[in-house]
Length: 304
Image (tube, rainbow, N blue to C red; front, side, top):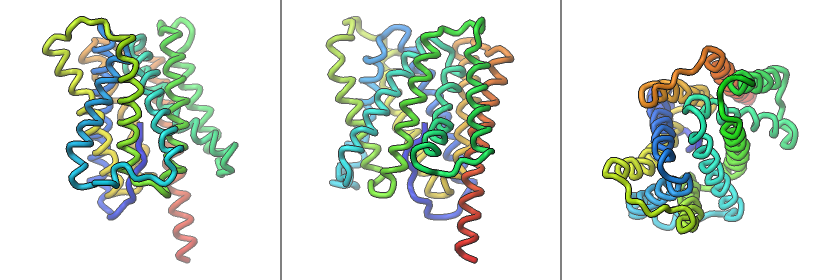
């Protein structure tokens, strides 16, 4: 899911769009790799390697240029809570992927932006409007189509995916709160650091002792690379186009997830689930476009 975006520094929407397309492909690849590895290893072990590799890459590649900016924050407590939310979301998503196809798990997790809309409307006094509420209701209806009784999905997997969506919604709300005071690079680093510590501490209780094969070693290492590169590309995209314009393109991850689920696992989603995924994607895109148009209208009014 999305990180705290960088501030747009120019108008290159095509470049920004291509970066988002590449980023969500890497995220889908990371989820697919997670599903492969969690078939043989506990989820905390897989997450530990992912976060440690990600954290080490940031230290090695960014410390020479960023220096103290990598760790400097103004609201450290909230930054750490936000990082904990992402670690929890990773755990829940890994548990969901153990039990569900990649596409269905990804679709349910993409309820997060709609949950953000509901919470922002109730507690942050942001205007939602009829279109926003209708989109949120449609998104939840899409989840019911995916997780319908008799659909063959593991109820525990669906529950874990819903938990992941809820925690990601909290993560995104904190991202909005912190975006005005914190540097993007510091937010990125603390998510990697907190995940490394939390999952690293858990290793003695979950590591089974059997050595991974050479292919599994490569897959383990690729987790941190895919996650780090995906977050970097996603953040870079917001330097060329506003977040409200790029947000609808995040739902392309559902397409990548469905394609990879078919290519790697031979999993074909039933028609009802595909329709549900489409409803969720359309609902999220409507919310993102509504936000984009509202911001444009406010900007035009301010100029006028």
